Amino acid sequence: MSRRMRLITAMIALAVPALTLTACGSSSSSSSSSSSSSASSAASAGSSTSAPASDAVAQAKATVAALMKRPTTFDVPALPQKPPTGKTVDFVVCATTTCQGFVPYLKEATDAVGWKLQTVQGGFEPQQIANAWNKVLRDKPDGVIASGGIPPELFANQLNQLRAEGIPVVLHDQPETSNPAVTGVVLSDDANRQFGQELADLILADSNGQNVHLALFVTAQVPVFANEDRALTSTINSSACHSCSVQQSSFLVSAAGTTLPSQVVSFLRAHPEINYVYFDFNDAVDGVPAALTQAGLNGKVKLLANNIATTQAAYMQAGQLWAAAGNPWPEIMWQDFNLILTKIENAPLAPALAVKLPNWILTRQDLPNINGQPMFPLALNYQQIFKQAWHVS
Image (tube, rainbow, N blue to C red; front, side, top):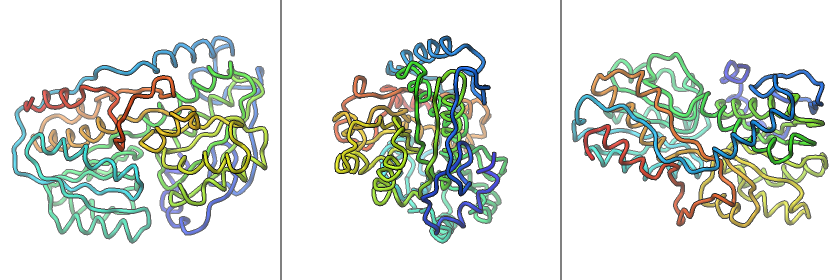
């Protein structure tokens, strides 16, 4: 995958403002282009591309109908025994608002087995990353969990030292890695591909596979998000969608809630055919509805995002955010810790890594009342499921 192979290059380029339009499926390009499809166009990828358009749309509608029902359960294999108490886990927290919201859910998990949680503030710049992981080395915890999708190549030396000390490390929102210092990755390529496919199916169902003009606002700073972008692009550019197109615009994570809203407005003015707009992660939506209203573009496009938290839930309730792929973040934090416990007990990792967390497409019609929480579980009984597996229920 091109982004994954250029991780270091992408991080070095972070200091350069990224306002570039790119060709579909190639966010590293400096050119501006769109890609369209018709009923006779060749399928580029995806399961829907080999079926007639009408069949693909019908299949998308059936998939969406199932995914708009709140999930009720999932399976977690039991640990061999109740975990030991009195240990410590470090959590390297990325700088976004969403990442900061992970902390209380992970603390609930560590509290459940009598462990102490220590937070380490991370970032997206190379020096911030190094500082965070150097602190982890000084802490000498019993396990490490890291958020933010930072490529492990950027803290490889610290990972090697942690491995030498026998300290398990779990990452999330990260491409799969063969690095032996990484115990496991949660919310990796397949999960993010699923999020993109869910919303691609929703767009197909909503449009009946006709005249979709989709803008993707993407960031190379979290490489795993490329899986979402590819799923959306391949579906909308397939024979399932008549007279459809996809365009991309790149941004830095730091632009979310600051300069990105004006970038979106400028893009829409330059490309008035756009009728759907997708954002790689939920914080990128912040400020966009107000900017669209001020620019007289309110109601012109349907906004979609991967994930949803308090701010975006308010947008959705107000009809300003059309849909989101629900990320099971409380479940993810408990699964992160589940992998640490599995490793500590020398239990087989493969069954724990294979845990399939729930999925849910969120719209105004099925949005739950989150009561101001930074995020919410998709399966309400997730704590009970994990505690039973850990012999602490």
